[in-house]
Length: 149
Length: 149
DNA sequence: GTATTTGCAAAAGCTTTGCTGCAAC
DNA sequence: GTTGCAGCAAAGCTTTTGCAAATAC
Image 1: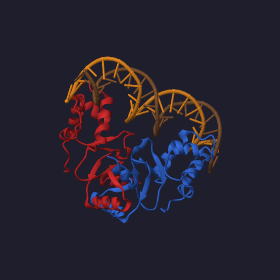
Image 2: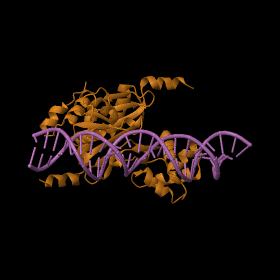
Image 3: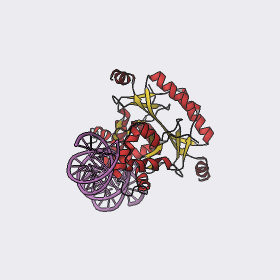
Image 4: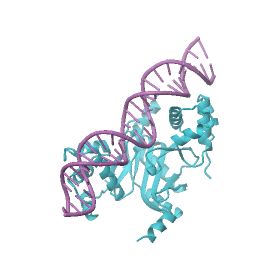
């Protein structure tokens, strides 16, 4: 399991003003299983603050992103153009998206870390965000494809 | 320089019906310098076929994508949510996007290829598309940032 | 001649914005 | 008491879609 930051503590440490709405959303993101889009986060956050507005959700996501506290994913645009969010992990990892069944797998490996160091060094580039997404077929879906004529 | 496929030849080989509109767009993509979004491609393609419609551009892009002839990029959403397109290269490569000046750099390394093989093997995943994007500051912009208080 | 593709115009999907009043500190 | 934030509603940007007419083979 990848270790993730505690967003509320980190927000406080960073001096981010914690309104009830931000608290509601941050707790929602922290407890979210899987990767959720803004609309889903909004619906869940309303269980904690029934009046929280979509716009507030978007604005808070933007804030957390700027602070590098969450990562934004596209997940190969498997379901439209929306974005998905996850708490930043200690280790960089990549996402495997299956075009067949839509399942998302996460994967971390030292090779990825090595690649990151190599990029930073060779390009003299100061890396802030890194997003590696892979689309294809998971084992099960690849096997099914094979079976068809 | 990364070697890219000849799209028109490949389209013919794949039995893709080559209408004048598709020809116009394919030639445009092939000759494009840098990474262009759908709107820019449309404007350029109109120089070859003045009546080509936006919708045709989107439909053809979708077609070429399905055939794995072009890659779609987000380039860290540096300028809104549009997508950018490039002819598929022989070698996988990644994109470095500078949040300061907006410059996009391409980078290919054997470590990336190794990572790809490792992912496919460890996850038993059949990879079709791989998109590695990095956001941060290029050397010049990082130095400028440093200079400020 | 027939199946596919196009242009057009409209809609859809997701996100951002301007403004006024409210909340945090 | 100030400053910044939230809610609301509207607009924005990019992409998709339905359909009749045109085109490729």
